[in-house]
Length: 104
Image (tube, rainbow, N blue to C red):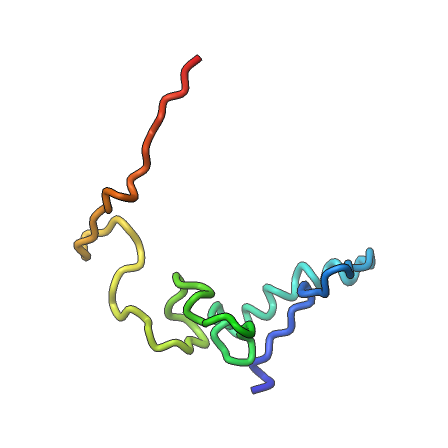
């Protein structure tokens, strides 16, 4: 399980800030990409990387497929974009945006 562990240097204790060290600043910027490349986009689903007290289903509902896929609910062959010609999706009238004109 240790090879699946993702350590984030950007997670710090409140009240403590990063040092102005240029090497540290570069690492803070690049380590996230390195670890996402190593573990895949679904790294947050691996049990050792999950936040305590937060359900996995609430973390990233739009993520699907890819390396390190842990969750079973992958929506099968459904499309994950809208609008599309494969699903019978419709706009819900109660969530329709109301437009107002701004005039002087």
